[in-house]
Length: 126
Image (cartoon, rainbow, N blue to C red; front, side, top):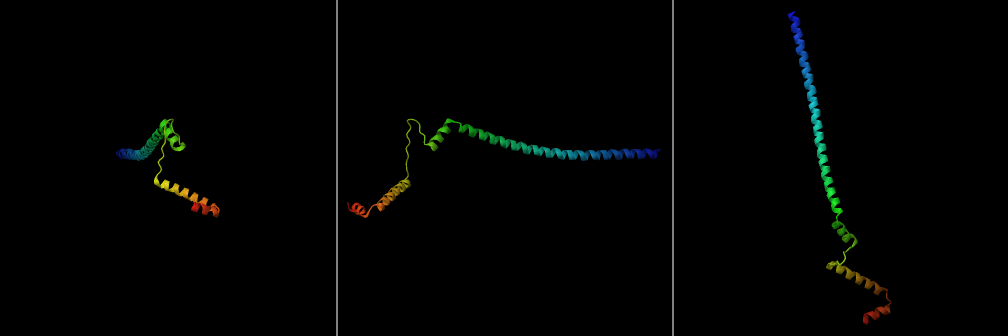
């Protein structure tokens, strides 16, 4: 009888150890799965924060584009708009003046080439 009791208690202990081992394996798998899910959540949260930042930047740009200041600036730059009573002064650089004067001389030379010879002589001396 003692032999049956020891075998029975050994079987119970072996069953308990195997159940504990199975529970530890299941727990470690679950912990690994939870860790992976948490990392994915963190990645998605970071992407959401980045997108929210981009959205706020776009909202600021849209708000600026809707202002009268932006519309007036664009109208002045692209459509040569000026307010009533406003005067626009254009200052040309010397390189532009040189280019314009050379264009004038070129057009004058072209006109001279098209003239008959007697007019060229007349223009030369008179």
